[in-house]
Image (cartoon, rainbow, N blue to C red; front, side, top):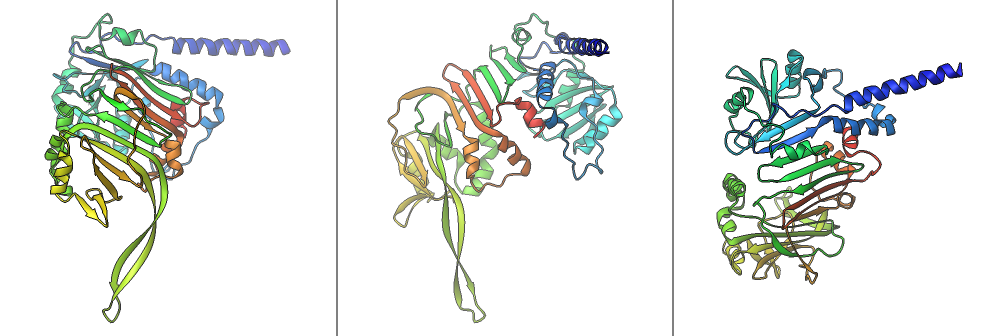
Length: 450
């Protein structure tokens, strides 16, 4: 009897191993999927990601088997996207600046159940439209295009762009990159969860590790300019150092799209500010402290006598330092003075355009310096050269957060995170690191089952 049970267990183990090897050792598909016109490609290795999640499930089955009842579970019929389309071993997204207009398009999927799939999109608040014989389902910048039981996913670079003609060309594409192409070769040889390649020889790889999500590689962009900064001292909650290239097309488009709104809200000229700014920016939050503010208001009693009312309000105030580089010594400072955005108030020089906190202002010739609840750093640390440095100790921040309203799902995600950082060196080496508090489980698995 014992031998029979042992043979059964061995047979079951061999069967499971065979199924596992058949599923997870399948080769990724690259042929006839990326147009020859593509200049940028992202590969999402679905089988690799699924494999990571499988082992996370085997190590922590109870967490995955737990289900949280939803209030609307009886009202809404769920139809997973994966039930409606054939899911390949990997998904490819591609783009270029010309024929694809910097939008990102996926390879073509085969649709298995279009009726339930389209019902699911409408249930999830996608907006339906019919253009040139195709069905489009749109939600923010994400678009699903359907034609003759074929599907393409699109990530638009802006909400208003018309992509219908481009989608037709992608559906009708006949000329594809071979696997030997210089664009595909780096990602074919790579075993990361997600990889990115461009014709400019940029390459990035992303992985969901135990407790960490990491993007590393080489990425050349002129959005930021390499410059020299002092190394950050101490143990701050957050810091940012960067120098923006004001002539970068993306930056110019951003400024043109926000100028009217900014000018209307602040009664200042965004163009004038940008012209007097050299692109350099420094921000550091050392700590966040509880402060008590007295708010004085006035009302009238029944006899129409003016009555002073004092309300006590508790606020979380950051120890914040900001430095904004000036194109010429003092020119930003003088502009803000001329517009009364910097004023004397009770013996202090205050920057009044941001009324959330009391910003103390200082003209340091090269920089316009602003501080809240803190004095400006007197830095004597070593100098380093980089394009971008950004860091947030999320765990430390959440111990005493700023009074910024967040949605419940945003708070749930932030509760998982320990630290977040980006370093982009002067020679284009790129590193993004998101570290979760729990180091024992797969990063993506924690996001899915939190």
